Length: 513
Image 1 (cartoon, rainbow, N blue to C red):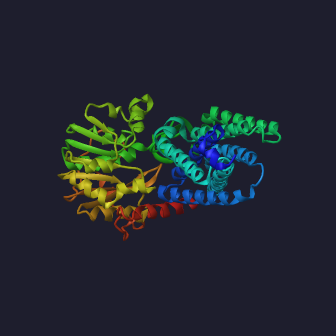
Image 2 (image 1 turned 30 degrees about the vertical axis):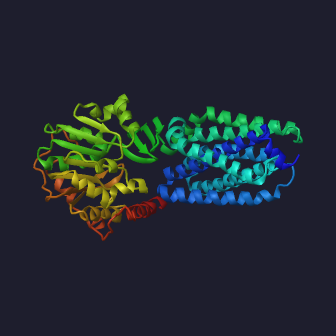
Image 3 (image 1 turned 90 degrees about the vertical axis):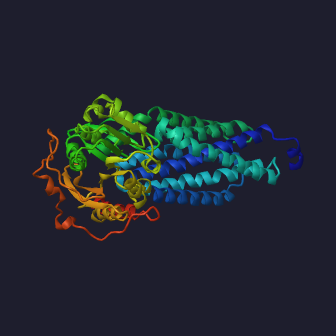
């Protein structure tokens, strides 16, 4: 029967099954690409660079795979089956392997990351050409290309939506990879059944399918143990809470230093000395303002800054703008963690808004006497936009005439140019920048900058019961020694985000040593 007559009678079961396999194959391939890029941005920072290089490497490897497919001439269904099993095992295990590598052999992480991406990309690049050559026996070329590409793109679309909204939040990175590895293995089993009359040594193929599926199911069941094994080694202390949200990996540990919070592997606070950080962040501006009534906190979903703000009787309302609802829920409902912030997020004065702070500032709204900006350091462009002149221009519009804003601003000792870049950027929008610093043992020498329209006035008094700050020693925080003194710096703009590059260079030198 000719290809034309086969086309006239409509698609046959084998053709439908293979086109459905194309949908699954495309979905799986994109998941492996996304997990590699997401993990590299989590662990290496600079999400734009990581996504760009991972995607570029992956597409190059797919091209290599497509080119290599010309050398597969006979027993195409058998080759397709073997490749599916290899993709299932290597791609499905990719997140678990990278998590373990980051914990146990961090020096080899980049090499392993790009090596796995090359292997998986090459195997995925082999899949579609082999499917098309198998289908070519029954479908005319013009319909073959259109149908295969249609199912390929539909599979990619489905995963691109589900990955950040459903898969990672519900399953986590490791289980997501293993689930799609299982789907690749299921395609191999389906191919085993479809081409059972063409395959030689069908028993060996069946055994390989069984072993691959068993390995993936076993790893899926033990995924929590794999994650714990990797994170316990990486964080050293016992993990008491961990979750993956659409925005970040949240890990809380407990050890000799008490509880510690990590976001994407970066320390946010340690229970032993967090009071130093948060007292230094909040009280210089709150006490100087006089009698602040309306306060906003941008970031700071752990509620520690809110705890300090509530020490001022004049405060009538606090608006906490935190992107990740998982953070505010955790530090509101988890009894031990809520105790650390004095159950501040349950105060009737506090209103929690889970949204992007940049977008929130763009909307018309209230003016504030004090705005506390407590974002993570600018490790990537998504956070870096919150340190730009565009952001500070929006911030200025929500600050009352006599108000103060304070921004946590990395270490002026380790990341000196990064620190003064923020000061220069604040001044570029017409605000005064008043820099100061404090020693926080978990972080080292840490910096803050006050932004205001009026000159900063040192407060005469502070709330009682503070453990770190006192009026006599407060002026010392505003004195900078020579190795932290101001250096020339560019304005950080949305169009260049020079701060992210500078920050990565400065902190990278420390990590390298």
